[in-house]
Length: 545
Image 1: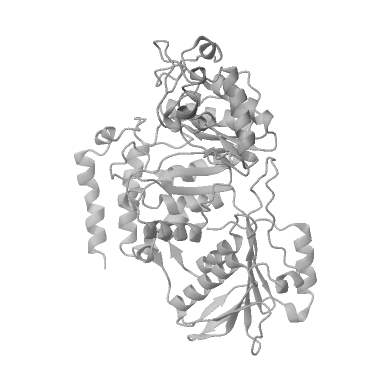
Image 2 (image 1 turned 135 degrees about the vertical axis):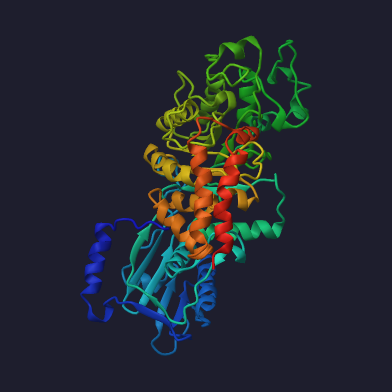
């Protein structure tokens, strides 16, 4: 469900001016009647993103009605006086005074990457279907699919088996006046390699995600486990500068062959100087570094709980030992002091970091500059409950996230879906939880989500579809969204029974006081008796006409 946004005063003035002209009076537009096309698709000239949106409209209108509408670039001759579907930032839309979101400004500021959006506007016998196509935005494509969704199309799962296209020999578009922007700038669930995907499957998944409002571009510089190792690759530096590398508990400097599994000694003065030198060379195009792009660079220690036991590193953090689910003391101060020092060295670049593992907590006594980006990954790991839970793991996680959002406007969440460690093919309650979480996260100022997913759609169920909707509009009505899914996808007879089966699983999970992250705990919730009890819903769905 795409969210309408209150129109600005300038748009309202334009509307009044337009509606004052009799020939521009908006009314419902019939674009197909009894299987015959009455409209032409006019697409912004030489704009590939707009052309992709126009082709989507042409394809799905034909699937619905059997009528293949003519598609031309703006400027080409149009026969007769058909209804025009104006796709993209067309000159005709501009002359009609329709304001379409635009702009892509990567200047570092709190609202960076928030220009994305689209407009759907009826003007006389024209329907404007346009969005922000600048930079990495895909607004016109979202506009096209938002219109198709209003006409009854749905894309619940990737590929044709997961879509619902209604049969309509006559298609009428109501009077529209919509401007819509996403509540979260960063919106994606990227399938990992846990379950292999072919290139074709990934292409299908990406196209499906875009139909529902995902944008798979990361926007901020990429960061991942071990990116800090790219500052001083071990095979290049260890022999001559062993002091750049972490010390183990036995007092020996050590390294791995690969940068991404090598921890550095962040208190080493020489390491900082060498890091600055290498980064300057990379930005000048004189050196290749895998953690650098045109907007900045990413740094984070390796996965796990990497730690340098040298005296200076141990003194540079508060060494908190809470929460106690980590074996080693927290390292937030040491790491973020190093990161913020680099950020001030490169004030026009974004420094992407990870608040993860023993760096999850906000550092004490470290001022976070405006060009630090934080990808927060909670180790509290309660996947059963939402952010309104009073259970301690969720409260810890939410408190840490709130603290980070107070420090920086550039905070995203990296989480996992499925949420269990292995994701052992059992129902989880991500959709129900996300419906609660999204408004809370919007109010906190979270920039968005970049989640690790999996090709396991009968486990993740509606959660990817629902996440796309909530990330665009945090106030999406989850009850209406799910009723639409079950009744549309399974039919009005079977749908309520399938919904009852799934919601029984959601209810038993949220009512459990267990704060689980490990799969084997689920046997204490999904007991044999519980599973036997919900089989009645499955049987009723199977027997439905």
